[in-house]
Image (cartoon, rainbow, N blue to C red):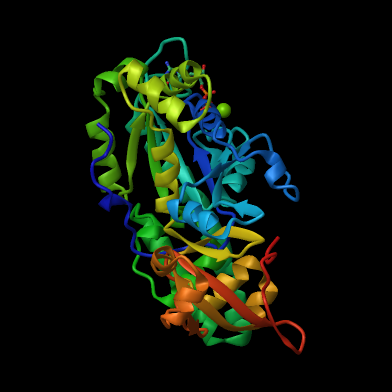
Length: 402
Ligand SMILES: Nc1nc2c(ncn2[C@@H]2O[C@H](COP(=O)(O)OP(=O)(O)O)[C@@H](O)[C@H]2O)c(=O)[nH]1
Ligand SMILES: [Mg+2]
């Protein structure tokens, strides 16, 4: 029953922020299992003391994303501080039909969704008469329509307002850039009118810049989490799954993960600890695998992220980056000053360091390379940035970005 192919995760364009602190939000109708899912994920949380300068809200779970290269670099450098990659997952209160018009707590929820980089769309496939459904009967396809429509409506409102403002500016200044922005927004309006999410468009670099300014709801990648009943999950049977899959295929595509929040709670209770091995063992005894780690990894993949590393004896740190980011942008993830004063990046490939074990050896083989501003960072790069903040060039030390 879990999806076999990863291909569905591939997306046409990469819209959104470049940042080391990317956020996924759990979105769905009330009583579909968002909070239950959040709780099963927050057990994987990074301890709050690892982030002394961040306030972590009760509705936020910072979750480590495993990377064996990070482990290996820690082994090579034996650093005093190790900082692995993480993403934040947010429990967002339920959206109801009409939220875009202010129904329920409408616009407040929608602004929370606006703040995330990717969406876990939680869909209820479990029956259970004890748990009321906001719309009465269980019907996941209707639910997905409602949520998607609310997000579309919100985008249309945003676009209408932005177009009005642009018209005024164009009438006054008649600049090419404003007219181009208008074209992009009109194209989005048309797509949404045809129920096509903005993320499915083919956009060029300039258009992507415009879209990243507007951060439309339908430009965010979506992972569909289908929360089904415990027994159905174990038996790998649920009558809704084919219908849900068909709807997803007809509405922009995206990965679908069937799981059971109820079952995961049982796995966790039996494991007695959120530890991966304990969970896997408990799940095996209960008769079906746990989906917790798949949920995290799928969210991460959907955001099309790559890792690069800064590594030294003081600290090995794994940084998160959007695929396709150039070296100055990667430096900017550490600190905006580093992007502004970017001079060059010194790059080692993980595989080379892994094989040769020391930086000295990597240099001796001529594999320690200097790259300029056009260099596109590749997954697994180990980078030292040279930048110019004051007049004089400085090399980022290992405390960079703390
Ligand atoms: N039977 C069953 N009940 C569930 C499942 N997931 C959540 N629930 C129950 O549904 C109710 C609403 O869940 P909650 O996570 O609070 O939903 P939210 O409103 O989307 O955050 C709670 O009573 C949960 O115990 C599930 O997979 N199976
Ligand atoms: Mg809730």
